[in-house]
Image (tube, rainbow, N blue to C red; front, side):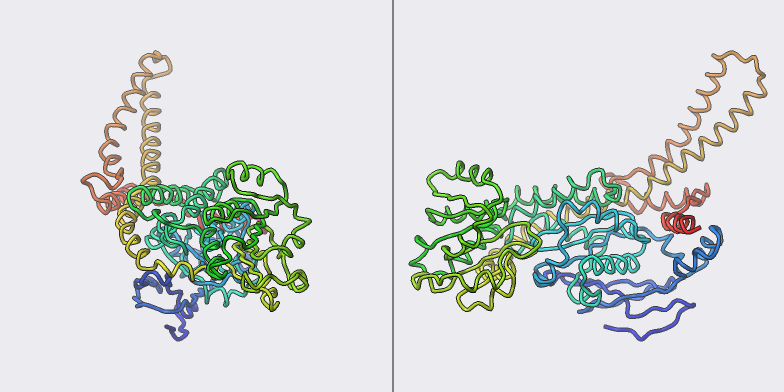
Length: 534
Protein backbone atom coordinates (compact mmCIF):
# COMPACT_ATOMS: atom_id res chain seq x y z
CA UNK A 1 0.00 0.00 0.00
CA UNK A 2 1.40 3.43 -0.84
CA UNK A 3 0.19 7.03 -0.54
CA UNK A 4 1.09 9.87 -2.83
CA UNK A 5 3.47 12.39 -1.32
CA UNK A 6 1.50 15.28 0.17
CA UNK A 7 2.50 18.41 2.04
CA UNK A 8 0.98 19.14 5.44
CA UNK A 9 1.92 22.34 7.28
CA UNK A 10 5.46 22.20 6.01
CA UNK A 11 6.01 18.61 7.13
CA UNK A 12 6.56 16.18 4.26
CA UNK A 13 5.00 12.76 4.77
CA UNK A 14 5.83 9.94 2.41
CA UNK A 15 4.55 6.36 2.28
CA UNK A 16 3.67 5.71 5.93
CA UNK A 17 5.32 3.12 8.10
CA UNK A 18 2.77 0.34 8.27
CA UNK A 19 3.03 -2.41 10.81
CA UNK A 20 4.08 -5.73 9.35
CA UNK A 21 4.05 -8.80 11.52
CA UNK A 22 5.62 -12.20 11.02
CA UNK A 23 3.66 -14.54 8.82
CA UNK A 24 2.47 -16.49 11.85
CA UNK A 25 0.21 -13.64 12.94
CA UNK A 26 -2.40 -11.64 11.09
CA UNK A 27 -1.55 -7.96 10.78
CA UNK A 28 -4.04 -5.75 12.59
CA UNK A 29 -4.87 -2.36 11.19
CA UNK A 30 -2.30 0.30 11.96
CA UNK A 31 -3.26 3.80 13.08
CA UNK A 32 -1.33 6.72 11.68
CA UNK A 33 -1.55 10.23 13.08
CA UNK A 34 -1.15 13.02 10.55
CA UNK A 35 -1.38 16.47 12.12
CA UNK A 36 -3.49 15.12 14.95
CA UNK A 37 -6.05 13.27 12.79
CA UNK A 38 -6.24 9.45 12.86
CA UNK A 39 -6.23 7.57 9.57
CA UNK A 40 -6.90 3.85 9.50
CA UNK A 41 -4.86 1.71 7.17
CA UNK A 42 -5.94 -1.86 6.54
CA UNK A 43 -3.59 -4.82 6.21
CA UNK A 44 -0.45 -4.00 4.29
CA UNK A 45 1.74 -6.74 2.84
CA UNK A 46 4.83 -4.57 2.69
CA UNK A 47 6.42 -2.05 4.99
CA UNK A 48 6.92 1.53 3.97
CA UNK A 49 8.63 4.43 5.71
CA UNK A 50 7.34 7.72 7.03
CA UNK A 51 9.75 10.60 7.00
CA UNK A 52 8.80 13.76 8.85
CA UNK A 53 11.24 16.46 7.87
CA UNK A 54 11.71 18.83 10.78
CA UNK A 55 14.55 21.15 11.66
CA UNK A 56 17.80 19.20 11.73
CA UNK A 57 20.12 19.21 14.71
CA UNK A 58 22.48 21.49 12.76
CA UNK A 59 19.69 24.02 12.32
CA UNK A 60 18.83 23.84 16.00
CA UNK A 61 22.41 24.52 16.95
CA UNK A 62 22.26 27.89 15.22
CA UNK A 63 19.74 29.15 17.78
CA UNK A 64 19.99 29.42 21.54
CA UNK A 65 18.58 26.87 23.97
CA UNK A 66 15.16 28.46 24.49
CA UNK A 67 14.46 29.19 20.84
CA UNK A 68 15.39 25.60 19.90
CA UNK A 69 12.89 24.24 22.40
CA UNK A 70 10.34 26.80 21.27
CA UNK A 71 10.75 25.61 17.68
CA UNK A 72 10.09 22.08 18.85
CA UNK A 73 6.92 23.06 20.69
CA UNK A 74 5.60 25.01 17.72
CA UNK A 75 6.40 22.34 15.15
CA UNK A 76 4.36 19.37 13.92
CA UNK A 77 6.67 17.19 16.01
CA UNK A 78 5.19 18.59 19.24
CA UNK A 79 2.70 15.72 19.40
CA UNK A 80 5.61 13.35 19.99
CA UNK A 81 6.41 15.07 23.28
CA UNK A 82 2.85 14.57 24.50
CA UNK A 83 2.02 11.03 23.41
CA UNK A 84 2.89 8.00 25.49
CA UNK A 85 6.15 6.25 24.66
CA UNK A 86 5.75 3.04 22.65
CA UNK A 87 7.39 -0.35 23.02
CA UNK A 88 8.63 -1.30 19.55
CA UNK A 89 10.43 -4.36 18.22
CA UNK A 90 12.40 -4.10 14.98
CA UNK A 91 13.55 -7.55 14.01
CA UNK A 92 14.66 -10.09 11.46
CA UNK A 93 14.24 -13.78 12.11
CA UNK A 94 14.54 -17.14 10.43
CA UNK A 95 10.94 -16.59 9.29
CA UNK A 96 11.65 -13.30 7.47
CA UNK A 97 15.35 -13.09 6.52
CA UNK A 98 18.02 -15.46 5.18
CA UNK A 99 21.01 -16.42 7.28
CA UNK A 100 23.28 -14.40 4.95
CA UNK A 101 21.59 -11.24 6.23
CA UNK A 102 21.16 -12.30 9.86
CA UNK A 103 24.84 -13.09 10.30
CA UNK A 104 25.79 -9.54 9.29
CA UNK A 105 23.40 -8.16 11.89
CA UNK A 106 24.43 -10.54 14.69
CA UNK A 107 25.81 -8.81 17.80
CA UNK A 108 28.01 -10.83 20.20
CA UNK A 109 26.75 -10.92 23.77
CA UNK A 110 29.77 -8.97 25.01
CA UNK A 111 28.72 -6.06 22.78
CA UNK A 112 25.08 -5.87 23.91
CA UNK A 113 25.75 -3.13 26.53
CA UNK A 114 27.52 -0.99 23.94
CA UNK A 115 24.65 -1.51 21.50
CA UNK A 116 22.10 -0.49 24.16
CA UNK A 117 24.04 2.70 24.92
CA UNK A 118 24.31 3.60 21.23
CA UNK A 119 20.60 2.97 20.65
CA UNK A 120 19.61 5.09 23.64
CA UNK A 121 21.75 7.95 22.36
CA UNK A 122 19.36 8.25 19.40
CA UNK A 123 16.98 11.21 19.70
CA UNK A 124 13.73 9.27 20.01
CA UNK A 125 14.88 6.17 21.95
CA UNK A 126 14.56 6.01 25.75
CA UNK A 127 15.30 2.33 26.50
CA UNK A 128 16.66 -0.61 24.50
CA UNK A 129 17.54 -4.31 24.54
CA UNK A 130 19.16 -6.66 22.02
CA UNK A 131 18.15 -10.30 21.44
CA UNK A 132 20.67 -11.81 19.02
CA UNK A 133 20.63 -15.59 18.44
CA UNK A 134 21.27 -17.96 15.53
CA UNK A 135 17.60 -17.64 14.49
CA UNK A 136 16.86 -13.98 15.17
CA UNK A 137 18.20 -10.48 15.59
CA UNK A 138 15.63 -8.31 17.37
CA UNK A 139 15.96 -4.80 18.80
CA UNK A 140 13.43 -3.87 21.51
CA UNK A 141 13.09 -0.16 22.28
CA UNK A 142 10.91 2.30 24.12
CA UNK A 143 10.43 5.04 21.52
CA UNK A 144 9.18 8.60 22.06
CA UNK A 145 7.88 8.44 18.49
CA UNK A 146 7.07 5.18 16.73
CA UNK A 147 7.91 6.35 13.22
CA UNK A 148 11.02 8.37 14.06
CA UNK A 149 12.25 5.73 16.48
CA UNK A 150 11.91 2.99 13.86
CA UNK A 151 13.69 5.15 11.30
CA UNK A 152 16.59 5.85 13.67
CA UNK A 153 16.98 2.21 14.74
CA UNK A 154 16.81 1.00 11.13
CA UNK A 155 19.53 3.45 10.14
CA UNK A 156 21.61 2.30 13.14
CA UNK A 157 21.19 -1.35 12.08
CA UNK A 158 22.19 -0.44 8.54
CA UNK A 159 25.28 1.42 9.75
CA UNK A 160 26.47 -1.39 12.04
CA UNK A 161 25.82 -4.22 9.55
CA UNK A 162 26.64 -2.56 6.26
CA UNK A 163 23.26 -3.63 4.84
CA UNK A 164 21.36 -0.85 3.02
CA UNK A 165 18.31 0.35 4.94
CA UNK A 166 16.12 -0.33 1.90
CA UNK A 167 17.18 -3.99 1.96
CA UNK A 168 16.59 -4.27 5.71
CA UNK A 169 13.06 -2.90 5.24
CA UNK A 170 12.27 -5.75 2.84
CA UNK A 171 13.01 -8.40 5.47
CA UNK A 172 12.36 -6.81 8.86
CA UNK A 173 9.17 -6.96 10.87
CA UNK A 174 7.80 -4.18 13.07
CA UNK A 175 5.57 -4.69 16.10
CA UNK A 176 4.23 -2.07 18.48
CA UNK A 177 3.07 -2.12 22.12
CA UNK A 178 0.65 -5.04 22.70
CA UNK A 179 1.84 -6.87 19.58
CA UNK A 180 5.47 -6.39 20.63
CA UNK A 181 4.60 -7.72 24.09
CA UNK A 182 2.85 -10.76 22.65
CA UNK A 183 5.79 -11.42 20.35
CA UNK A 184 8.47 -11.55 23.05
CA UNK A 185 6.16 -13.73 25.16
CA UNK A 186 5.77 -16.13 22.22
CA UNK A 187 9.53 -16.06 21.64
CA UNK A 188 10.24 -16.89 25.29
CA UNK A 189 7.63 -19.67 25.25
CA UNK A 190 9.25 -21.22 22.19
CA UNK A 191 6.26 -20.57 19.92
CA UNK A 192 8.20 -18.44 17.46
CA UNK A 193 11.17 -20.80 17.32
CA UNK A 194 11.97 -22.86 14.27
CA UNK A 195 11.69 -25.84 16.60
CA UNK A 196 8.52 -25.46 18.68
CA UNK A 197 9.05 -25.39 22.44
CA UNK A 198 12.86 -25.53 22.31
CA UNK A 199 14.31 -24.53 25.65
CA UNK A 200 17.44 -22.68 24.60
CA UNK A 201 15.57 -19.49 23.66
CA UNK A 202 14.30 -19.09 27.24
CA UNK A 203 17.89 -19.24 28.47
CA UNK A 204 18.80 -16.60 25.87
CA UNK A 205 15.99 -14.29 27.06
CA UNK A 206 17.29 -14.71 30.62
CA UNK A 207 20.73 -13.75 29.39
CA UNK A 208 19.37 -10.48 27.98
CA UNK A 209 18.20 -9.56 31.49
CA UNK A 210 21.46 -10.65 33.10
CA UNK A 211 23.62 -8.65 30.68
CA UNK A 212 21.29 -5.65 30.84
CA UNK A 213 21.52 -5.26 34.61
CA UNK A 214 23.37 -2.04 35.35
CA UNK A 215 23.23 -0.78 31.76
CA UNK A 216 21.59 2.66 31.83
CA UNK A 217 19.43 2.16 28.73
CA UNK A 218 18.02 -1.15 29.96
CA UNK A 219 15.25 0.72 31.76
CA UNK A 220 12.11 -0.04 33.73
CA UNK A 221 9.82 -0.79 30.77
CA UNK A 222 12.20 -3.02 28.78
CA UNK A 223 13.52 -4.73 31.91
CA UNK A 224 9.96 -5.39 33.08
CA UNK A 225 9.02 -6.72 29.63
CA UNK A 226 11.85 -9.25 29.51
CA UNK A 227 11.41 -10.35 33.12
CA UNK A 228 7.72 -10.94 32.46
CA UNK A 229 8.66 -12.85 29.29
CA UNK A 230 10.79 -15.20 31.41
CA UNK A 231 7.78 -15.81 33.67
CA UNK A 232 5.64 -16.57 30.62
CA UNK A 233 8.23 -18.95 29.19
CA UNK A 234 8.42 -20.89 32.44
CA UNK A 235 4.64 -20.99 32.89
CA UNK A 236 3.95 -22.21 29.35
CA UNK A 237 6.44 -25.04 29.72
CA UNK A 238 5.04 -25.97 33.13
CA UNK A 239 1.32 -25.86 32.32
CA UNK A 240 1.33 -27.24 28.77
CA UNK A 241 3.05 -30.17 27.10
CA UNK A 242 4.75 -27.91 24.58
CA UNK A 243 8.19 -29.12 25.64
CA UNK A 244 7.20 -32.80 25.44
CA UNK A 245 9.11 -34.27 22.55
CA UNK A 246 10.45 -30.85 21.62
CA UNK A 247 13.80 -30.72 19.90
CA UNK A 248 16.46 -28.04 19.84
CA UNK A 249 18.34 -26.55 16.93
CA UNK A 250 21.18 -28.92 17.76
CA UNK A 251 18.99 -32.03 17.74
CA UNK A 252 17.31 -30.88 14.52
CA UNK A 253 20.80 -30.56 13.00
CA UNK A 254 21.54 -34.17 13.95
CA UNK A 255 18.19 -35.29 12.52
CA UNK A 256 18.93 -33.45 9.27
CA UNK A 257 22.33 -35.11 8.93
CA UNK A 258 20.81 -38.56 9.51
CA UNK A 259 18.10 -37.81 6.93
CA UNK A 260 20.80 -37.08 4.34
CA UNK A 261 22.89 -40.18 5.14
CA UNK A 262 21.93 -43.66 3.96
CA UNK A 263 20.16 -45.39 6.85
CA UNK A 264 22.61 -48.27 6.74
CA UNK A 265 25.50 -45.90 7.51
CA UNK A 266 24.09 -44.29 10.68
CA UNK A 267 26.03 -46.52 13.05
CA UNK A 268 29.45 -46.25 11.34
CA UNK A 269 29.50 -42.72 9.83
CA UNK A 270 32.48 -40.70 11.09
CA UNK A 271 31.23 -37.65 13.02
CA UNK A 272 33.22 -34.48 13.70
CA UNK A 273 31.92 -31.74 16.02
CA UNK A 274 33.71 -28.39 15.97
CA UNK A 275 32.98 -26.35 19.09
CA UNK A 276 32.16 -27.69 22.56
CA UNK A 277 30.00 -24.79 23.80
CA UNK A 278 26.29 -25.07 24.59
CA UNK A 279 25.25 -25.88 21.02
CA UNK A 280 28.14 -28.24 20.40
CA UNK A 281 27.49 -30.09 23.64
CA UNK A 282 23.86 -30.64 22.61
CA UNK A 283 24.98 -31.95 19.21
CA UNK A 284 27.26 -34.45 20.96
CA UNK A 285 24.44 -35.54 23.30
CA UNK A 286 21.99 -36.06 20.45
CA UNK A 287 24.52 -37.99 18.40
CA UNK A 288 25.06 -40.25 21.41
CA UNK A 289 21.28 -40.65 21.82
CA UNK A 290 21.03 -41.71 18.16
CA UNK A 291 23.52 -44.50 18.74
CA UNK A 292 26.74 -42.88 17.53
CA UNK A 293 29.48 -44.74 19.51
CA UNK A 294 32.42 -42.51 18.61
CA UNK A 295 33.05 -38.91 17.56
CA UNK A 296 35.89 -36.42 17.30
CA UNK A 297 35.46 -33.02 18.98
CA UNK A 298 37.62 -30.05 17.97
CA UNK A 299 37.76 -27.22 20.49
CA UNK A 300 40.09 -24.45 21.60
CA UNK A 301 40.74 -26.17 24.95
CA UNK A 302 40.30 -29.73 26.19
CA UNK A 303 38.62 -28.80 29.49
CA UNK A 304 35.05 -28.65 28.13
CA UNK A 305 35.50 -31.79 26.07
CA UNK A 306 36.75 -33.66 29.14
CA UNK A 307 33.66 -32.55 31.11
CA UNK A 308 31.36 -33.81 28.33
CA UNK A 309 33.29 -37.10 28.16
CA UNK A 310 32.83 -37.53 31.91
CA UNK A 311 29.10 -36.89 31.57
CA UNK A 312 28.61 -39.28 28.62
CA UNK A 313 30.42 -42.35 29.84
CA UNK A 314 30.37 -45.21 27.36
CA UNK A 315 30.79 -42.90 24.35
CA UNK A 316 34.26 -42.51 22.85
CA UNK A 317 34.91 -38.77 22.51
CA UNK A 318 38.28 -37.89 21.02
CA UNK A 319 39.62 -34.36 21.59
CA UNK A 320 41.59 -32.51 18.95
CA UNK A 321 42.88 -28.89 19.04
CA UNK A 322 41.76 -26.26 16.52
CA UNK A 323 45.11 -26.49 14.74
CA UNK A 324 44.12 -29.99 13.55
CA UNK A 325 40.61 -28.97 12.39
CA UNK A 326 41.17 -29.40 8.62
CA UNK A 327 43.01 -32.70 9.12
CA UNK A 328 40.08 -33.97 11.21
CA UNK A 329 37.62 -32.84 8.53
CA UNK A 330 39.57 -34.92 5.98
CA UNK A 331 38.74 -38.05 7.97
CA UNK A 332 35.08 -37.17 8.73
CA UNK A 333 31.90 -37.99 6.85
CA UNK A 334 29.78 -35.39 8.66
CA UNK A 335 31.11 -32.11 10.08
CA UNK A 336 29.00 -30.15 12.59
CA UNK A 337 30.13 -26.57 13.31
CA UNK A 338 28.89 -24.48 16.24
CA UNK A 339 31.50 -21.93 17.27
CA UNK A 340 31.27 -18.20 18.01
CA UNK A 341 33.84 -17.35 15.33
CA UNK A 342 32.90 -14.23 13.39
CA UNK A 343 34.81 -15.43 10.31
CA UNK A 344 34.33 -18.72 8.40
CA UNK A 345 36.37 -21.71 9.54
CA UNK A 346 35.93 -23.52 6.23
CA UNK A 347 36.24 -21.97 2.78
CA UNK A 348 36.40 -23.58 -0.65
CA UNK A 349 40.20 -23.80 -0.57
CA UNK A 350 40.05 -25.79 2.68
CA UNK A 351 37.59 -28.35 1.33
CA UNK A 352 38.29 -28.85 -2.38
CA UNK A 353 41.40 -31.01 -1.80
CA UNK A 354 39.97 -33.15 1.02
CA UNK A 355 39.85 -36.88 0.16
CA UNK A 356 36.38 -38.11 -0.93
CA UNK A 357 34.17 -40.00 1.51
CA UNK A 358 33.06 -43.56 0.91
CA UNK A 359 30.02 -44.51 -1.17
CA UNK A 360 28.61 -46.35 1.84
CA UNK A 361 27.86 -42.92 3.35
CA UNK A 362 26.52 -41.41 0.14
CA UNK A 363 29.78 -40.22 -1.42
CA UNK A 364 29.30 -36.65 -0.14
CA UNK A 365 30.89 -34.97 2.87
CA UNK A 366 28.16 -33.16 4.84
CA UNK A 367 28.77 -29.83 6.57
CA UNK A 368 25.98 -28.98 9.02
CA UNK A 369 26.58 -25.42 10.22
CA UNK A 370 24.36 -24.15 13.06
CA UNK A 371 26.41 -21.03 13.80
CA UNK A 372 25.43 -17.43 13.12
CA UNK A 373 27.62 -15.90 11.75
CA UNK A 374 28.23 -19.04 9.71
CA UNK A 375 31.35 -21.15 10.26
CA UNK A 376 31.17 -22.65 6.77
CA UNK A 377 31.39 -20.25 3.83
CA UNK A 378 28.70 -20.50 1.15
CA UNK A 379 31.50 -21.06 -1.40
CA UNK A 380 32.01 -24.57 0.03
CA UNK A 381 28.75 -25.56 -1.68
CA UNK A 382 30.60 -25.21 -5.01
CA UNK A 383 32.73 -28.25 -4.16
CA UNK A 384 31.18 -31.25 -5.91
CA UNK A 385 32.01 -33.69 -3.13
CA UNK A 386 30.50 -31.56 -0.35
CA UNK A 387 27.02 -30.52 0.74
CA UNK A 388 26.48 -27.56 3.08
CA UNK A 389 23.46 -27.08 5.36
CA UNK A 390 22.82 -24.15 7.72
CA UNK A 391 20.14 -23.25 10.28
CA UNK A 392 17.69 -22.22 7.55
CA UNK A 393 17.76 -25.77 6.18
CA UNK A 394 16.41 -27.16 9.46
CA UNK A 395 12.89 -26.25 8.28
CA UNK A 396 12.87 -29.58 6.47
CA UNK A 397 13.09 -31.40 9.80
CA UNK A 398 10.59 -29.14 11.54
CA UNK A 399 7.93 -29.53 8.81
CA UNK A 400 7.50 -33.17 9.79
CA UNK A 401 5.50 -32.34 12.96
CA UNK A 402 3.66 -29.22 11.77
CA UNK A 403 0.18 -30.37 12.89
CA UNK A 404 1.38 -31.22 16.38
CA UNK A 405 3.14 -27.84 16.57
CA UNK A 406 -0.08 -25.96 15.80
CA UNK A 407 -2.06 -27.86 18.44
CA UNK A 408 0.52 -27.19 21.13
CA UNK A 409 0.74 -23.54 20.14
CA UNK A 410 -3.01 -23.08 20.66
CA UNK A 411 -2.69 -24.43 24.20
CA UNK A 412 -0.01 -21.87 25.02
CA UNK A 413 -1.77 -18.87 23.46
CA UNK A 414 -4.36 -18.67 26.24
CA UNK A 415 -1.59 -18.29 28.82
CA UNK A 416 0.19 -15.68 26.70
CA UNK A 417 -3.03 -13.65 26.29
CA UNK A 418 -3.58 -13.65 30.07
CA UNK A 419 0.01 -12.67 30.82
CA UNK A 420 -0.07 -9.94 28.15
CA UNK A 421 -3.02 -8.31 29.92
CA UNK A 422 -1.15 -8.40 33.22
CA UNK A 423 1.93 -6.78 31.69
CA UNK A 424 -0.13 -4.07 29.99
CA UNK A 425 -1.86 -3.38 33.33
CA UNK A 426 1.54 -3.03 35.02
CA UNK A 427 2.80 -0.71 32.29
CA UNK A 428 -0.37 1.39 32.39
CA UNK A 429 0.05 1.77 36.14
CA UNK A 430 3.47 3.35 35.51
CA UNK A 431 1.69 6.23 33.80
CA UNK A 432 0.51 7.53 37.17
CA UNK A 433 3.91 7.44 38.92
CA UNK A 434 5.06 10.91 37.73
CA UNK A 435 1.69 12.40 38.74
CA UNK A 436 1.91 10.84 42.21
CA UNK A 437 5.40 12.30 42.68
CA UNK A 438 4.45 15.74 41.36
CA UNK A 439 1.25 15.89 43.42
CA UNK A 440 3.13 15.04 46.61
CA UNK A 441 5.86 17.57 45.79
CA UNK A 442 3.20 20.22 45.06
CA UNK A 443 1.48 19.55 48.39
CA UNK A 444 4.81 19.57 50.23
CA UNK A 445 5.75 22.97 48.80
CA UNK A 446 2.43 24.42 50.02
CA UNK A 447 2.85 22.77 53.43
CA UNK A 448 6.34 24.17 53.91
CA UNK A 449 5.34 27.67 52.78
CA UNK A 450 2.32 27.80 55.13
CA UNK A 451 4.32 26.24 57.96
CA UNK A 452 6.95 28.97 57.68
CA UNK A 453 4.25 31.63 57.77
CA UNK A 454 2.71 30.06 60.88
CA UNK A 455 6.03 29.67 62.71
CA UNK A 456 7.10 33.25 61.94
CA UNK A 457 3.88 34.53 63.50
CA UNK A 458 4.48 32.43 66.62
CA UNK A 459 7.83 34.15 67.25
CA UNK A 460 11.41 32.99 67.62
CA UNK A 461 11.08 31.71 71.16
CA UNK A 462 8.60 28.93 70.33
CA UNK A 463 9.56 25.71 72.19
CA UNK A 464 10.94 22.84 70.12
CA UNK A 465 8.10 20.63 71.30
CA UNK A 466 5.51 23.09 70.03
CA UNK A 467 7.36 23.51 66.72
CA UNK A 468 7.40 19.75 66.24
CA UNK A 469 3.69 19.52 67.08
CA UNK A 470 2.86 22.15 64.45
CA UNK A 471 5.05 20.40 61.86
CA UNK A 472 3.45 17.03 62.62
CA UNK A 473 -0.02 18.62 62.39
CA UNK A 474 0.73 20.12 58.96
CA UNK A 475 2.19 16.85 57.72
CA UNK A 476 -0.77 14.86 59.04
CA UNK A 477 -3.30 17.19 57.37
CA UNK A 478 -1.48 16.91 54.02
CA UNK A 479 -1.24 13.12 54.23
CA UNK A 480 -4.94 12.81 55.07
CA UNK A 481 -5.89 15.09 52.16
CA UNK A 482 -3.64 13.22 49.74
CA UNK A 483 -4.77 9.75 50.81
CA UNK A 484 -7.90 9.73 48.64
CA UNK A 485 -6.27 11.05 45.42
CA UNK A 486 -3.29 8.72 45.89
CA UNK A 487 -5.54 5.68 46.27
CA UNK A 488 -7.30 6.58 43.05
CA UNK A 489 -3.98 6.85 41.23
CA UNK A 490 -2.73 3.43 42.30
CA UNK A 491 -4.02 0.56 40.21
CA UNK A 492 -2.39 -2.78 39.31
CA UNK A 493 -5.24 -3.97 37.14
CA UNK A 494 -6.50 -6.50 39.66
CA UNK A 495 -8.94 -4.42 41.73
CA UNK A 496 -12.44 -3.14 40.99
CA UNK A 497 -11.16 0.19 39.71
CA UNK A 498 -10.44 -0.05 36.00
CA UNK A 499 -7.25 1.26 34.47
CA UNK A 500 -9.20 3.72 32.34
CA UNK A 501 -10.72 5.21 35.52
CA UNK A 502 -7.27 5.49 37.07
CA UNK A 503 -5.87 7.26 34.02
CA UNK A 504 -8.89 9.60 33.93
CA UNK A 505 -8.19 10.47 37.59
CA UNK A 506 -4.56 11.13 36.69
CA UNK A 507 -5.45 13.51 33.85
CA UNK A 508 -7.99 15.28 36.07
CA UNK A 509 -5.42 15.85 38.82
CA UNK A 510 -2.86 17.04 36.28
CA UNK A 511 -5.33 19.64 35.04
CA UNK A 512 -6.61 20.74 38.45
CA UNK A 513 -3.15 21.24 39.96
CA UNK A 514 -1.27 22.19 36.75
CA UNK A 515 1.14 19.32 37.21
CA UNK A 516 2.01 18.90 33.50
CA UNK A 517 4.98 21.25 33.62
CA UNK A 518 7.81 18.70 33.75
CA UNK A 519 10.19 18.92 30.78
CA UNK A 520 9.77 15.98 28.41
CA UNK A 521 12.50 13.46 27.68
CA UNK A 522 12.67 14.62 24.06
CA UNK A 523 13.08 18.24 25.16
CA UNK A 524 15.87 17.16 27.52
CA UNK A 525 17.67 15.39 24.66
CA UNK A 526 17.35 18.38 22.36
CA UNK A 527 18.51 20.77 25.08
CA UNK A 528 21.54 18.57 25.80
CA UNK A 529 22.36 18.44 22.09
CA UNK A 530 22.12 22.24 21.75
CA UNK A 531 24.30 22.76 24.85
CA UNK A 532 26.95 20.32 23.62
CA UNK A 533 27.28 22.19 20.30
CA UNK A 534 27.79 25.64 21.85
